Length: 185
Image 1: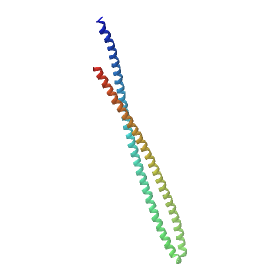
Image 2 (image 1 turned 60 degrees about the vertical axis):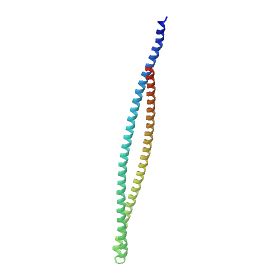
Image 3 (image 1 turned 60 degrees about the horizontal axis):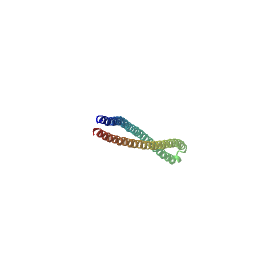
Image 4 (image 1 turned 90 degrees about the vertical axis):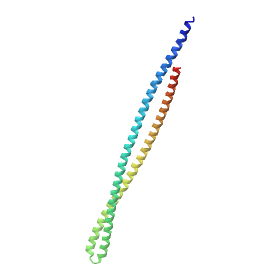
């Protein structure tokens, strides 16, 4: 009877060891899956940062183009204004000389008035273009800011997920270490 007692005692021990070994294998598989998830999240984070950089670069190029267009349009407006002022000066001289040369002064006046109207129309059109370009610039800038905020929120959420995964991974490592120490005892 004494020989059967150790055998009965060792069978539950063997079953317990087999159970612990299967649990240990399960934890190792879970740990490998968590490493894959962390690596995947790191890749996604890198991709998001790269996309943010690309968007920022494109925005800066667009911004530079808009600013260049605005500067050109303002220059044209200033040139038009200078021409308009010059024509107004000529118009004043024509009026002064009207007493001496009424007929020729009226022709010059008509020509100057037509040219002034043309320049004012051009000036108004250029001013409209400046306003539209500035409006488009502000809209693009607002969209860019909104997109930046969305990217920042996405990045923050991904950082939270990464932290959660890291803490879960550390917890699993601690449990694994405990199980290994239990197995060694």
